[in-house]
Image (tube, rainbow, N blue to C red; front, side):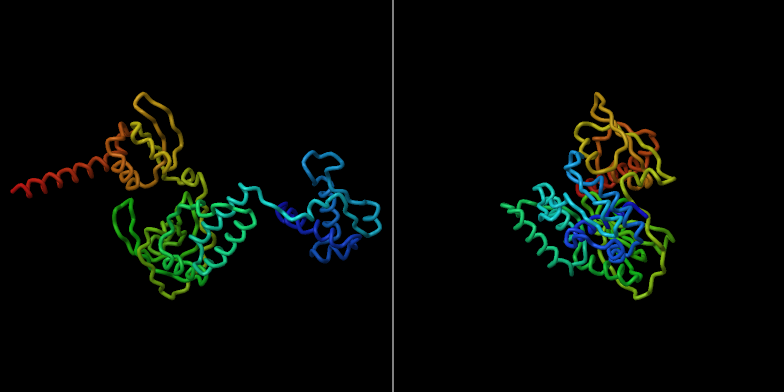
Length: 321
């Protein structure tokens, strides 16, 4: 029996026993769909549950003599009958989570989310709810609606995707699997039909979604891109940058493995699985990058910068003529 399932059951068991004093052991086990032996094991766990402190008066009590007679008598758990009140920090966390759900979830959930937020703010006496803001990049509501429909119906869609790393627009055919929020951005986890593998797409860069109506086969669960997921990629290479003070802001926006202060500013080490992504970051930072190790990692960005400079100079000469 998984501990997660047992904890969930205990949260329901205590209020049930409070509402049914001297409940029959076998009947209670039947209510929760478990064996009597498992129910006894749950009750033994309750012996060690209660208020902080852990003293006898702080913990719940189960009358073992009554249990041997087939009855359950639970005491010293009256505090669980009192209504739950959130602390201000807990309430704020729920408001932020709900507003994020409103941005990311199916637009049909909008009214329910707004109602839940309003009730929570009223219950907590929030004085300035408008000051609680959530900054997210989730794309258009219509695109999210079509993606959610494809996920629910398990169908294939065609995307128009503006990829920043390679500075090009592509039209991948994908099987949407999951929408997720990571670091303030909404991402679509989908099976790429063209690449025959899982891919991740930033939703705010999806310019269009066209349903095909074709059913998508079962691909199982997509990989979890939790913190540290980049470390698990076999083709990820380690790159070290020495940044000037003016460029250290980038560490707030991209995954960094190590940082070390230097006389010039900051040395950072990161993992790179896509050279085009690194090129875009280096061009973005410009003169704020003082050194790159290994040097060949910067070659693509240097060539792009030279090409851009040559084009700029040729345009300047053309305008003078």
